[in-house]
Length: 101
Image (cartoon, rainbow, N blue to C red):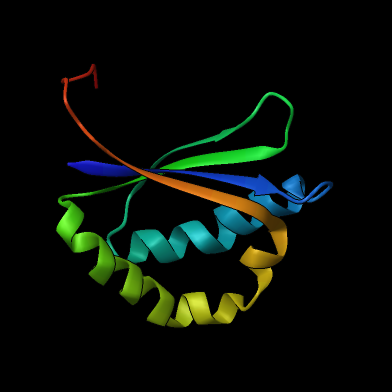
């Protein structure tokens, strides 16, 4: 299993609306396409939103991402996600040690 740790710096004053958008509109599109979101966090200063989504292999990511951007759900979002995001960092990580479930 691999995961993407995605850190988004959210525009000042927009975290509350981002959280609503993410939970009500973005998350369902991902999960409907078989892209599990396994964790979400907000930094202590409230400026960064960190989320983790998982994939079976790194090789499936391009197809899953293409399906996401081509989906009706993502198209319906328009520019709402990018209007909230000042900066984005995405890191691919691989599971190496079994952790408590």
